[in-house]
Length: 441
Image: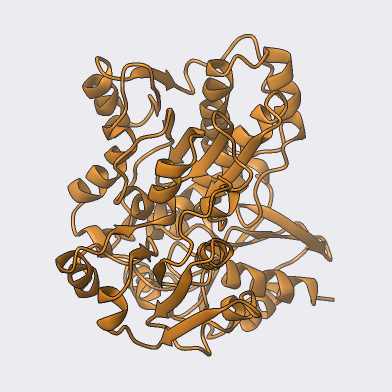
């Protein structure tokens, strides 16, 4: 998109955030020649990193609060997906006939791209990145954006009609869509974000938006091993072209041995990516070669280093108990003779921790616990389990893990909880873990 269709328009960016998406949005509208105002409930101090990335750009800021005037005088509101649709300021905008979009919804309307959208409770980033890794071998003009920290609006100047764009889409990003991807992928659905949605039914409904506007020429790829997604397949079979993948039905024409991704959950991610590649007519040998060169995504069961015979892994994006349960199982399967030391804890998102506590009792040797409401729940379910060691900082957690570990052990940061009580976000949590591990001697 070369035309400056927002030249001179007043644009309010609601929620700069810390992940990079809001920065990309602000940059895009500045380049378009719009009058940009950024408003965020976080203070200037908390947003320092994001604001520094926008230095030199003509932007007005309202920080630490929102002001009604910013939602009345604007020509367009771009809301951060984290902002709930029930915000009174969005109501003010609507009452004054000010259109509200997200960067994703606007990209759908403006890009003309062939969009491959990936959602799911777990596996979104790995599956999106793997799909991108595979299909760019055939389609050079392929792009990756969305929930991975890249605003798709940053791509608009490069994307031509028909170019392939892989979008990782969270449930929050799906809420505002009125269009669906040409290929929609759902990896799985497990309890998450119940602090936002209230019930599992509402959370499931948010995920269904990814295919709600598909037509008979569009593809929907679903995990047949997931009970909820099997129901989706029955619902959509007469509307979309539904394809399912399953651990019980692996492709016979592609060798899946000796890949770098560990665990059954990653095998499901791989099978989803293969389905997309086949729709796009990528040869089996090309797919196989790409799978063997894919190293995975940072912060997801990522090996950091080995210190005195102890291996350290960063799984900071495990922000729910099911993700940590999966991590424990994967590491026990791949390191069956190792003791497992788990760093976990943080804030609860309205989730339950009984199953996690059960597997910790049975399979984890030592637990280093960061503070938070989720930590309180885990401890409540771990009565009489004596190997919990409470800490207040990540540096302290890594130091404590080193004290309890011996040669051959595995230490994993897999929190099973949100990070906002101690860290800027889960990536900041992971960065602090990595830094502390790299400082070990």
